[in-house]
Length: 287
Image (cartoon, rainbow, N blue to C red):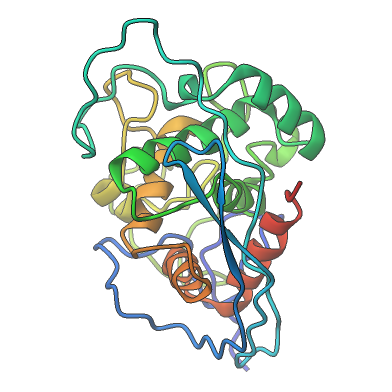
């Protein structure tokens, strides 16, 4: 029997075999390919502190699909935005700017970061990237409703929030140790020939998944974003990677329903069991 292939980059990831993380180099179709089989969904719209004013809290939604797993789609504490300047400029149109003036991490209230980081164990700097990307997309794509905990769950499953291999996340948003997966050479892993000349993964023969969100170079070339305002898009930098993941997920549509949420996460990794795992981790951040 042939050995299953995968392109998930590191041993700690729970991404299932035969799948690739953020593998597509084209925008995902709004048509769902997931086997949802949803039995029920409970949504309560609650007034809150999110930047869009209303939070869609999605309750436990049991999904029976071919793997027989069940999953609970997220609900989590609202992100509190950082206080606005005393005399702010007129708000910009809700579009994705080519270059951000400041890091998305600066959008998030410091006290909120302290409280949620302490309660969840997520490194504060990684949490700032997750939450900042969520707030950024609330402005860019207000119909997306992407929660910070979805991004946090992906970052946790893919790289232990940037701590894979015993590293830490620096104040600049870079893991102290490079997070580069094995060669996608068609052996134990999916076969993807080099697409970046070794720019991100150091390999001119085969691609590797890179950074805290484990983007393969093909996907990064199409989607890579500058989240920290330095004029560069680097898959190793947390703000850049989180903003890119957020835009990638939001391209799938509205995440406020169970089927919409599952469709978006499944576009990131084409596996129902991966979606279930992200839902489980995201729900562990509930408060």
